[in-house]
Length: 253
Image (tube, rainbow, N blue to C red):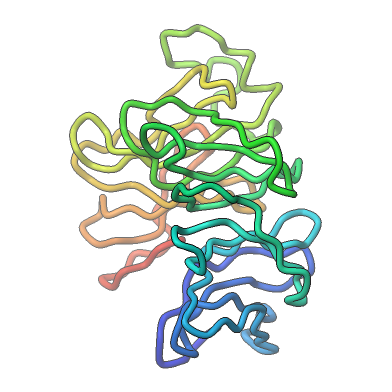
C-alpha cells in the first residue's frame, strides 16, 4: 500500500473508508490518509519541525493524534479533511496512545498520576478521568466494546474478584504492561478496574500494541515465535494465531 523511501506507521481504519496513518516522508512525522489500494494519499497535517503521530479515527470521523508541538507530547484532534485542529489536553504532563471508543470517548495513557496509567476524556477533552491503578507503567491501550465476543461466554472470569457479569455491561480495557517475569504482556480489565487479568502471560516474551479489528479479533505484536510478528486472538486471550510470520519486524503500530 505504501512504497516510499521512509517510515510509515500506525495504520487505522476510518469511517469514511480510508486508511489513516503517520509518515515521515516529508521529514517529520505527519498524519496522512489514503484509499485501501494506496492511492489518493492526502496530508492532513503539514507542520514544519513538528511531529504528529499515532492517529486514531473516531466514529464521528475526527482523528485524534499525539503531537510534540508543545513542551511535552499532547493530544489533539482534526477533521478527516485536515481542518479544525483542536488541542484536547492542556496540562504539563506526558500523553500518548489515544484511541476512541464506540461511545466517542477518548482513552489514552498519561503520566498525570505517579506513573503512566489509562485515562479517559470526552471528545472535546473535558472531564479527564483515571481508569487504572497498576503496579507498573502502562504503555499502550485498546478498548473492547461491551459486545466483544469472548471465547468463554459465562465462565470467562479467571481472577479472584469473582465478578463475572461486569464484563457484559461495560467496555473493557486492553493495555500493555511489563509482567512479573519481565517481558511485556497484554492485560484486560473492566473500566472500573475490576477483574484484572494477564491475557497473554507469555513469560519473557513481549506481547504488545493491541488493536481491535472489525471482525472482533484482538490483533497484537509478539516476538514469541522468534521474530517480531503480528498475531491475533479472542478478546479474552484464547486461540492465539500468528497472522504474519516473517523474519523482518512486523507490528500493528
